[in-house]
Image 1 (tube, rainbow, N blue to C red):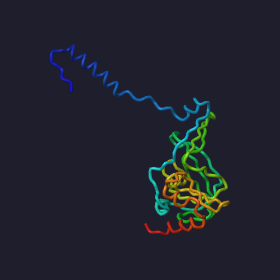
Image 2: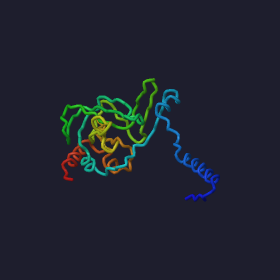
Image 3: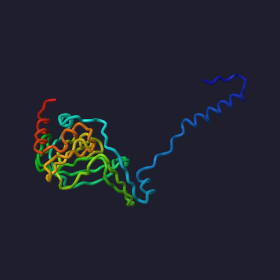
Length: 214
């Protein structure tokens, strides 16, 4: 706290001047962060981003995934489209699946459902592009069948979002007859338990998880 002696106008003006400088320094804002568009333009029209899909919430079992999911189904990927979120601060991709079997939720077999995931490729009106790739998950491939655990979207989300990021998506590999979790973190409890499990055994475990009481 500053104390000003009465009858000292010069000292008073000096102290007030110094206080105004200090206040100005405190109120100054940090430099604005470059937007994705600015970074892409600086990069010659291309910006490549790599990120980890480590989820803040770890689902340690199929039962936990099932309990937190609004939709559980098997479905084949028939299309995908990258876009920016509403703030244009991140790239997300809408994946369209044709549903084969519904285990939980109000969709029907044969319906299409849009499921959002982080990452992908999206462009601006001037042609500059941003590509965001998670280095700890497999790509989602067209004409491939998956087991999908999904939650209803909120805010900017369209349709559904995969529960727990990559934790809620499992490839059913028709060639090997085995399950391949999308998430590549092999220390994750669900990945450790079900990677390379037979498809029929995995689907039976999904059935059991949905039927189990919370």
